[in-house]
Image (cartoon, rainbow, N blue to C red; front, side, top):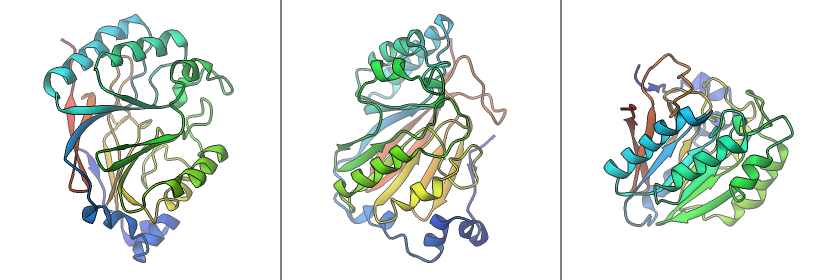
Length: 273
């Protein structure tokens, strides 16, 4: 099944306040990045929904790392977009950290709902990934922002108030005209299953920024939504123990290139053995 690329109708856009801004031509930020000095082109990889369960998953993820190292030598960092583990246990999260460190690339991680052990408990994740909550980093003229969109183990959520407050405090620190990419576990794209219920309120916070790409997980399927020049995606899972939600069999990750203020991406399938 191909990527679900669905241009939104005016009526669908107007269902959301973020869509209303675009329909009215009032979301200028996404167009600025092409004119910004974005630095040299570079590649990076994006993986979501690893769902590490037990040692039976180890050969799969070791194979993923081996493939990335063998065929994507130019990648300069890796985004892990939530659900690293199946049940948020340290004995599941620690192997993921160990295996993907072998990439030899900076790892930038955000939490998924399966990385919580209970509605209140996420100590395993916080201990093993202590600086992977809400943060941003710069790379070759680009800004990358990762934030926590989870609410415990819940599969359907609104982004919590503390994360919204962090965005409100942090966004003024960013350069509005530098190209920006966002990564968070729950989908933000319109008309995507399991989309965060307050995704519009999240997206509105970026309306004055050069937001070019949003990478999400949680919904194990390839979807693409366009809001002006901003592309919002989910991807198939990269899991040994879980399947895709849309019935497709291919599993893998994105190989992305940032160039001239834009991000292009290619799905790379992985098969064990």
